Length: 99
Image 1: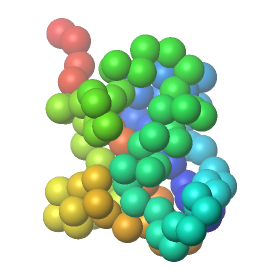
Image 2 (image 1 turned 135 degrees about the vertical axis):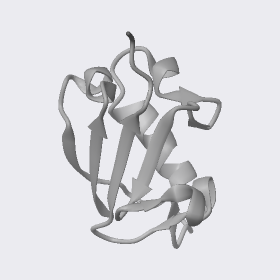
Image 3 (image 1 turned 180 degrees about the horizontal axis):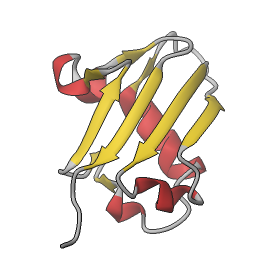
């Protein structure tokens, strides 16, 4: 499944300072859909190069990370259970900044 991932607010620093990633995620055998839970596991394994604790806590994103799926807050679509479709755009933005 082809997706576009965008990282902002400093999260791109965890992914080799690349803000936009065009990725292809293979569905697991027998799986018919890809959820945000699956995608986050994929991101942790394949994109986050350092300090994964700055991006994830457990199997979800850390508090303070805004997640948008096609410009819609994932809290309105089911968070970890949100089903992704081909060519979806998922944006991760850290709202935590130093002062």
